[in-house]
Amino acid sequence: RLQPYGETEQREFVCQLIHGFVRHLKFLTEEEVREWAARKKALATFHSVGIYEHPDIEDMEGKGLKYADVLFDIDVKEENLRKALSIALEEAALLVDTLVEELGLEMGCIRIAFSGSKGIHVYVTCPQVRRLLDQDARRLLAQYVTSSVLRVPKLPPRELLENPCNVAPYGICKRIVYLEAGLPAGADHVDAQVVVDLHRLVRVPGSLNPKSGLSCVLLPSLDVDVDKILEMAKPLSGITVKVIVEKRAELPGGEVVDEGPRELDLHSAIYLTLSGHARLYKHR
Image (cartoon, rainbow, N blue to C red; front, side, top):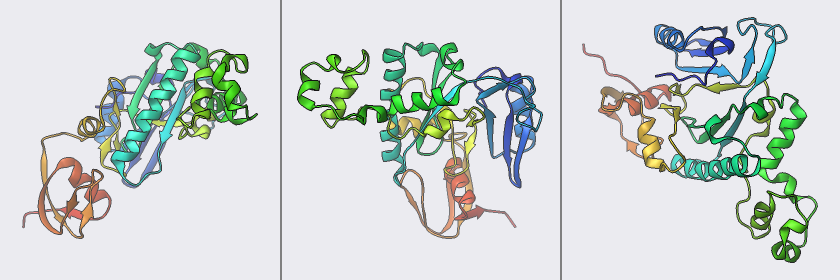
């Protein structure tokens, strides 16, 4: 079930179909989005972080950008999906702590989603962030949450550890201490270009990620463990499909599937079919 991030009628929607992408779509309601995506058999659905006057106009200037939400995309380049997701969850917790405890944002306007692959999306609609339309301001925000700005200048560890607030602005003392102690001090895998881009597209929660065959899903909290998230992200859990596995393959969760006819859960069947390892079994 697709769950756009609100203000549906003012966002540009993009759908990935079998033969390519369809852009500059406008819908008045969430139900219209779901009906269109289902009718067109969309593989994936995205919408803009930007709120526009005319989201269906192809010219980006003509769309009339009003303001934009901020998307923090934590994408870990790690082959093992479980390990990548575990790292992303840890960084998301650091990021949310920074946004709420240091920058004073309301938790109620921060939404957290599993991307459907190896990352976490932290999606922010707080009014004080939306006013940061200037890309330079967003670039500084990206540097701040990743702690990259804390690396220059290099400050003496002893002085920091004795009283870090004498040499650092209020709110980042803890992270400077962590950094000097060799502990994680920021969300290092946040893609700064995503934060800066006012016209960025975000995968709509409930939409399939064709790379993994898993769905992008909203998380109730960051306390959900990796196995639970992967179970939540499996589309239509409980349904099985018969396929012909044409070459031995490893599923995103690490399970290996051998060649031959197999009856698999829907997620595994989708993943193997999209990756070219299997085809649907057809009765003759």
